[in-house]
Length: 233
Image (cartoon, rainbow, N blue to C red; front, top):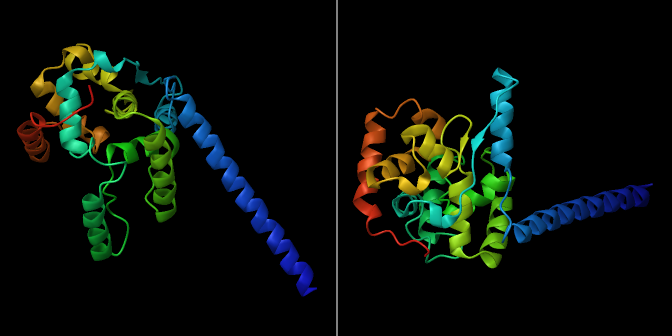
């Protein structure tokens, strides 16, 4: 009886491992495909559309893909300055940032900070949910390694700028530039780029609170550092 029970447990664990491995293969296949094919949608976009359609069944996302060369250099620098100053130097993980996040999490007694790089944020946006858990962070790390080992830094930043959220139903630099400034992403100036970059941590809130003191302070900080931010050519 006990032997049979352990046998079933062993088979169940083997099946679970098999499912997990198949999921990793499925993710890696998408990562490889997106080296030179643009993602039509992401996990975050799908979640955002579901959220919008709960209020309005006919709602659609605002999103238009534009190539890297058609995104303002000011926005590229502002995003790197705001989100990941060591973007060109690390291989997906900012050790110093992670250490600070761990200290903050231990102090709070729960997961409140992740020390995420642009590569990690992209991994989450493409495949995962917005929930905070150690399991999700583990999967995020695996996907980050996949992306960093197969994509150039230019491609990582290009995809990131084209898929991140910039307000309710607004995804990517082109849709954001047209929504807030009625111009293409290629025409954004330094001030506009800094203001868009400042929205990234909490875009749906900042969409209607861009007059807040916290937002203005963040814009000023980004402006201070974006001139020295290094981005892929």
